[in-house]
Length: 476
Image 1 (cartoon, helix red, strand yellow):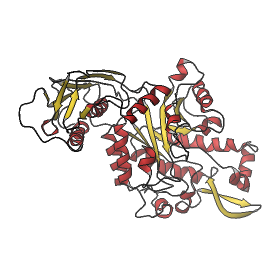
Image 2 (cartoon, rainbow, N blue to C red):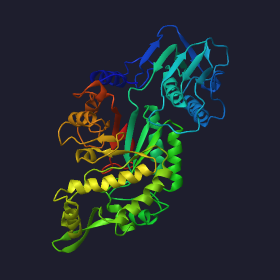
Image 3 (cartoon, rainbow, N blue to C red):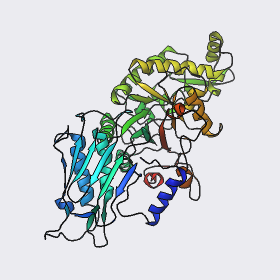
Image 4 (tube, one colour):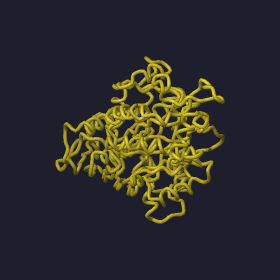
């Protein structure tokens, strides 16, 4: 969906804001909409309306994804605000039912990169039918149906006769939340997942830990959160919390990709994992400060093997985000043991090679668990050897236009994920949303084959100046 680019998307949103679009308009814009704005409508009574399975559907009652979705959307209709008193007199035509038909019987799994989210929706006074290949497409169609319902000034609900054929333009439509710089209560994460579903986002990138705090409560290394969280009781995510978020997201067709960023951005790891971080030196004397993960110790890789074994089990998505950005080399340069290691390895003074040494070993660990990985663009920029199916996350703008980076990544045959123009946490003035809506992810010099390697985009909400009090208005 949302095949519009730049000015088209801006114009559509502007119309929405000033109320000039027809009642029952859908956001984001579907691929194909045929709507009758004349007499082709029916009245809808939330109390008398039901969602059901068509006889042709490969799934039926007992499919938790759709059973719970039916209940959610019925409640949305019921609780949509003041409405006209229930009219018990016969009213024709009256919409009473939406039947859903899903072609494939898979209902208990998790969405993934290859999930089919297309659907067809036909609404009329006689019959409303939603058909899709998968339950994930059915979820998108249910969201569209809920937006088609509109209410007049008297509080009466209506549904226009509409035919929609829809599918996403990009497979990855993500949102990053940073829960380290400011802890976000589970409730706030769940509310965000709800709004993501309303907007047909399908990936929650959980940047769960970083320098300031380590709120993930690890079973293998409990001291990481006990000593690294802002509060080891109130500001942590327990295993049950994480499972709740993952299941809540699954029921809305949203993947959860966790990020445990290394070797930089790891200061909060140090108190709970002695010896993991590099001791920094002032001349020939330890300064007492610590830098990135120490890449020259076997104990480092033993630790990472155990931690990511747990993470690979807790988070079911095929992909893990491994970070790899903004590694400060100054501490490594100051450490005499690392200097000696650099000489033995023939790295000279090129500390990007040391970073590559660490990243490559980490990637081997992740691969041993049957997982794929996403990395920030510095891993690619520094020449680290990665698997062909690695996803390169493009975020930097200060090293040249991001379009050039996307071109380089895809020219090398890697898939690209774009975030550079969508850092929503950045403080700016005026109507900065216009810039975001003008972005065209495929607007770079490259072949058609390169452009097929752009899997989508991801908006980022970093937490330096964002907590639970301003998260929602800043995001949406």
